[in-house]
Amino acid sequence: MASTPNSPCGSLIAKFGYNEIVKLFDFVDSGIHRGSWWQCVEEIISSLPNFAVVLKEIIKKEVSNSLAQDCSALILAMHEDPDALPILESLAQLGYAQELVWYIEENGEIDPYC
Image 1 (cartoon, rainbow, N blue to C red):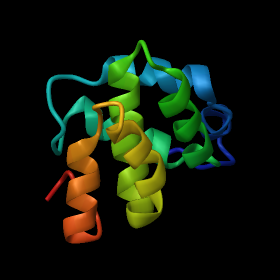
Image 2 (cartoon, helix red, strand yellow):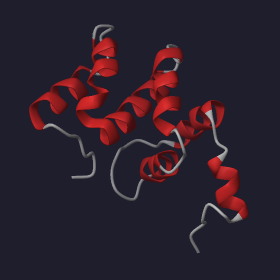
Image 3 (tube, rainbow, N blue to C red):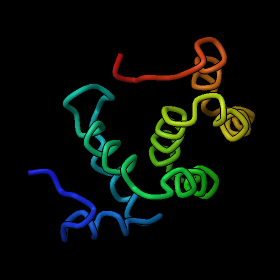
Image 4 (cartoon, rainbow, N blue to C red):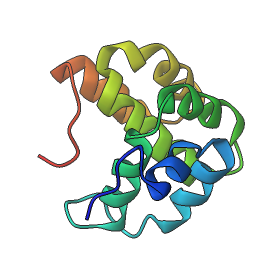
């Protein structure tokens, strides 16, 4: 049974913030593909209110946690596509996320499940 925002589980998950999202990334396994833990984590995060704001904060602050930055950047790119380019380009200047920037510029969007 899926949880809804009005269910106890949905209400608790809707309160997830910065720390909870960073902890969720610890569940990401060895790949980004359908049926993986990544897909479950991405679905939870993408359903949160204001998830993009929190992901941008993680990208800027989690410099010692590259997994959290990588996952945050990819989820942000999946939802904001070209609008995510400024923050992704700032990461690319640090030697990070260049492939995401290139892919969005070439294709206009990103879908890791295709």
